[in-house]
Length: 464
Image 1 (cartoon, rainbow, N blue to C red):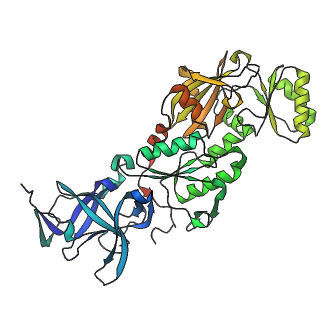
Image 2: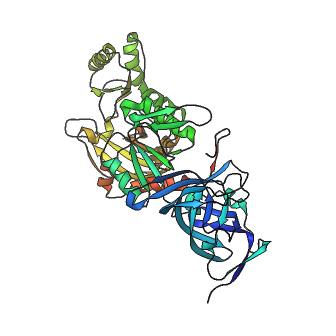
């Protein structure tokens, strides 16, 4: 039995798989194909599984509300409009709903800005059982544009939508490959971009990021994996993506603060987060006073630019500490002096925090004869159960830096957990293998949960 419905020449419709719950569409039996108002139309993905990403303004006259959509490409076709102009358009297939009835239709993508209806439904989409009352309007139930202001995320509105994600990385390592594999397993496209090959056009109207001579496409999200040696330039690139309006998993300010060890410790002190007693001075005349501020030897002397345990020295006596400090000053290096938490016994706890939750924790143990537990320095890792206080400290530390992803390193001291470092670009290999868990999945869960309909910045051009 065919379900019979009558539609007028204008109706409320929805395209649920595109995240478009309410559109006013013109029903035009004189047109063969259906068309949707779209701009910033960009293909992506493999040639044998091509997608197209495009922007839609679902409400005529509302240029400030934009929905980012994506769908598989089924064709690219030349279409002649009612005014006789021909245009080569991408063709997608998507579910079309009107009233209580839903079925798949083909839709071409074209810029219909300025037209009264941002969707035209052609006769090809009108299946058996549809009767068109050419003089009537809105024969089917009314929908509401309020659906776009419901506060729902794009995952809730269009759970099957494929995303286009950029990973800013110069390394082809385990962490980068895991991000690619996990994203692709969900139907997303993940592209690795060398941060140092990006350059920027900075202006008030249409800021852009370029790569190898071409403007980078519009990404749904960016996952920064910025190496310590390129922090200033890398964070500048991230700021540019933030200016454009692209969702960045870790923000530029958080990365900058976490990489500056002095800034990081001051920020943690501001938020009353436990950490080893720390001192800093610029003048060589203050060496003895500097040592005295953190207590007696043994002491840790740490270069401010240190990563992966490099540039971290244990001075077992006051004389040794003076020698190390003198050597660092001779190299014009900036450093911190910290008390040595002896009871940690060469162990620390790495908590991986994603989206404000600790998704995994490991205990790292230093190699024989070393005090540094970093895996890059030969340390070993195993699963560990953390206390409620350690969990809360790790979450508070990541939040203090505004980081949606962070590796928080804790020492277990006699007076509670002390944060050693907040890493804004933590590796996944050691913790995933130690726990035998897929932790990268939480990154994509978080990104999918954060994407929402876009409200444009004032002054930015909203269509081509």
